[in-house]
Length: 525
Image 1: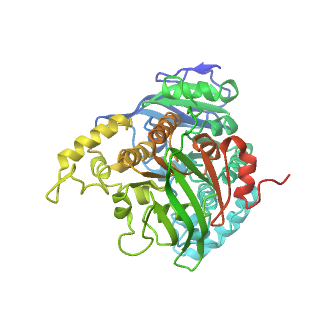
Image 2 (image 1 turned 135 degrees about the vertical axis):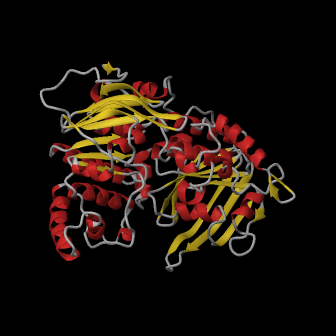
Image 3 (image 1 turned 30 degrees about the horizontal axis):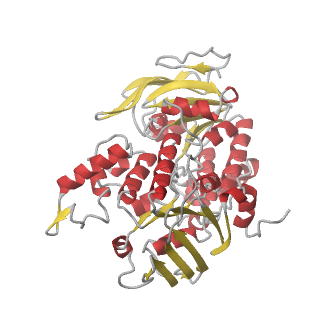
């Protein structure tokens, strides 16, 4: 592996004959006491896919937000195509040929694809000519880059993968030659991610420059030409992807050797903790989302639920967590739980020992404008250790949060910061710390490592195994098959609201699980 270390100023790389698409020199940015970027230097060549990796909180997204004009650097210079360029806002970035696809999409859900693409880029006082022009361009762009998006479809009716393609179309419509994607596969299924990679390869082959911010080493190795590694706000290395390996990149990211597999002993299951029989859920549109689901989880084991997103896993977690009503039967340690009406909500579930790490930490796990210490108390604030005579003990909650932040390595370790000020991975650690440290009878975990870096993934996996080994029952939902196979002691596969089958990790593989996820019996071929 050839490593080009970077400590500020110009990167230590031989100058090519043509100017790079992007060059950043000496970029620094602080938010109060937090130094997000420190003397960053990076060079991105034209017509390449350049990966930027690092732990959550390493400064990747801050650096790209500076490039896109969301933040102004405290120091440093930006060069686009060899020309020094001031980027005070996102409009200046767009004029410089830069487009950005954010991890959380910036789309109006009740607008059509066409309306979203034109929004903010209208020409003249009348909308109709802009829409007509955009329709023609959209059709051409969609065909050229295999984006396959209906311009008249409502955003709310599109899959997450198609919504992401709309974001790419928005950037291309604004004539972006440089495309920044921030954790683009964090909300995609494996098949959607593979399609995205084909799109990005096509864009690169047409001469576009792609910057890919990700924590997934498989994606880096599969799709990038070059990768830069950030750690604690600094750029530590730039390497050619073909000359490195996942193990070496993980060590560069974290600063130590990282175990890329789950290290665990065989489970020792005890008595049945959770028993679910004939569970059924119908949504507000009359569509049956769960169709007679039956399963059980024993003490001291992890039951993994595999499946493509949208096949009932979310509804299963919501019913078990007290968020949605259902019919059927659920028992916890032999005692029936109510599935609707009074005493069937999340507070009632927590009272009997069920804790829940939701799939969407922003919608269900956190209140982003509230401080970290407030978020780590949500749902448990009435407990005696946090409350006296009905009055919250804020000092106790802050002290408790400090302990959780230390044990779960939340960065920065400031309990007074708003949840929105933390990176996605550190937000996830806050939710995990809150739910895992309640000594649960049953832990429900949805997408535990979504948007989380390699070092944090290792940590989260270790904590889940530790909880299992302490005799806790864990139900795990994940779209990451590798994670399901690594963590689970048993695997149930869901398709179209049903359990398609159950397998032991040692007796199956991704191919068979993939067939079950597609509604086949897994034994074909």
